[in-house]
Length: 262
Image 1 (tube, rainbow, N blue to C red):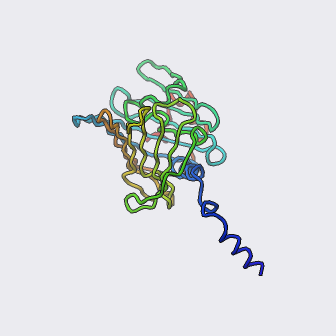
Image 2 (spheres, helix red, strand yellow):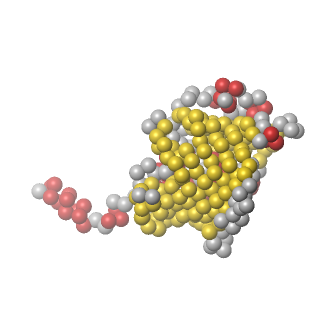
Image 3 (spheres, one colour):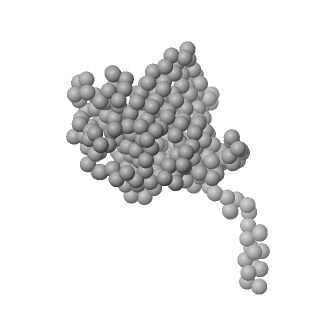
């Protein structure tokens, strides 16, 4: 009898009572996209392509380490191999969930570590179509999230989430994300400017299983207004590599250990 009453009560509840919330979708997506493993390492090739087809290359090693729970503090370290004008340049981020991130850039040409201001987070990352914030991720609580619809994308069932910034601290009015229901990776993102026009578009072009973690190994960001785009390929990807805490220091920005950058 009790079992029957429980079943009857469940049947009377609205469908929404069982549905995942938009904020929970984005939290799971953040965990799948930016927090998998205890740490992460990859060789990253960025191809910057102009509207006319002219190409420029950026090659770097990227390292990331998590501190605490998913959605908590993280540290990022990047070392640039090419082109010549950015060789030996390093970039470091201390990411915090409830306040502005700290970012440093070491410029070898002037042998100086430069602090990047919080308001520069929407600036272009080394001339690409990605921003500094795209690289380290945006805090979930900085936006309000709404489930717009559910639809298939490239054969994958997706949630489509509209994220609207609570403050005017970015150069877009809202973002649409197509989040894979299976892996929770973002397969597509569209950024709309202050006039409501599509300005940038992100796509996950290849997903591979790395040590049991679905990982986006090829991605593209297009600037729909300038015609410029950036194609990114991850190789030598690894999780739980045992990255030491000491790597994330001003000392190693100037002289990064070879074992981590090669």
